[in-house]
Length: 157
Image (cartoon, rainbow, N blue to C red; front, side):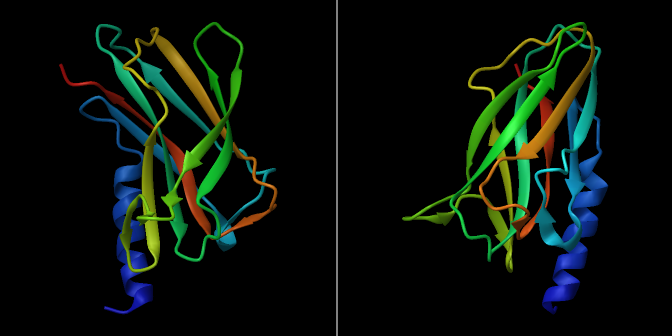
């Protein structure tokens, strides 16, 4: 299978799973045209919490090409919980190290990362949460980034 077909199959599989909200999981990503993420492009995601009796983990999800030049990705991550104002954090997402290379899973020249942002499971309030992502690298637009998003999942007991 050539690279274009492999990328198409992987992209279709990701789209089918990207907005899934079953079994306590929400995952959604924004796709970047021309495979570059401009700092002005700040995707927003909303997630409704109905089950407050469980704990959750929150992840950043990133897909990039092998040609991406950095070992990390700095991101402004904003969270607005129900009834509260938004809280913004600057987060360093580690994508590679010099010993092992890319830390995510890869197929051909495309790599996927699911990076946990919560150190320990957290309890969420009932209502709608809003998450916003903004790349904060010095290079703008940031080339070779295919998409970025969030994942919220229930922690198994």
